[in-house]
Length: 387
Image 1: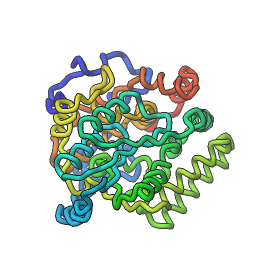
Image 2 (image 1 turned 30 degrees about the horizontal axis):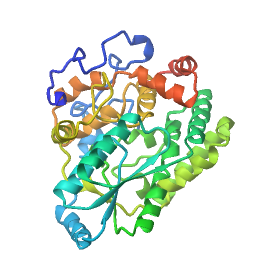
Image 3 (image 1 turned 30 degrees about the vertical axis):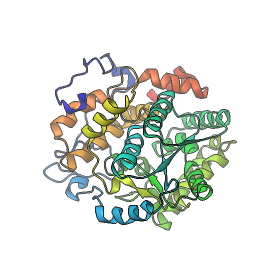
Image 4 (image 1 turned 45 degrees about the horizontal axis):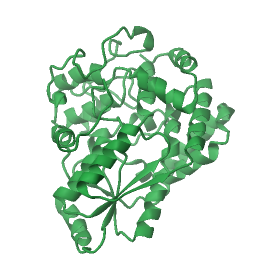
């Protein structure tokens, strides 16, 4: 994998060609104060640095520890008792973690899963092909539940245009509100299929971002959102209500979808087996298996295998990069550094490549939902920077 080479430059033939991005809010050359141990910048919500320049995430070792493998084995032993039919449902987005999770579940854990995808209109064709290829080779049934995609895309348009009227970083997650019903469908399918367990393959240890809720005033710590206290959930609701009152453009036909998404995320029962809470996630292994054994596809010119199955990621990462000078890749690489998986030097070498705006994908995303690219870029670039 090219990601194993810390000397990879932007001129790598798999990376986006270098170009002058100074007018596009590229934060790579920004005056950012970064942690001396990891790479988190001073624009990160709730961050502070000690006299040595180390951030509180590193000082407090804020990284979700792996759970005991024996705990997972006990749960799997119950599933293995079912031999005449599928014994679990696995949520699959078409991204690298869920696809690799299928491989692990079938080939390494000996499970007999059914794969499930919720298509809300932002699943890329590439993600569909990756999932189809995985399921075919593994002999796994794949159930796709499709939303009313034109309506979902119209809701996205309404929320983006509302957000552009009064940009707030804490409201950026509303762009992806339409996909949260996958929790509801997973729970429904579990009952209909009679399988005892739902397995998620989120790489929660390294993909934990903190800043998305942080910009809304919520300090998550190591918890998943649905594990927040009732008081914190109410604070989150209060933040959204305040934003809706300040910006009535949010009060449109997408509101019901957004409310349903909030309920699905924070109040629905989340009784899932999180596979990578127990099993080590090694990037080089994940990529080798997917690329060499399954022909995993990534977008042409894209320098990473992460976040390639979701059309929204290039857009919201562009917003974060423009306004605060960092993206999900900064937190991802910082978590790996904190866990001793990569060096700070390697992470620093990767960030300029991985965080470079993927403008062709941003343009395609906005065209899909019906938002004018030039209008959106002009508004985003007018937002005062926080660095």
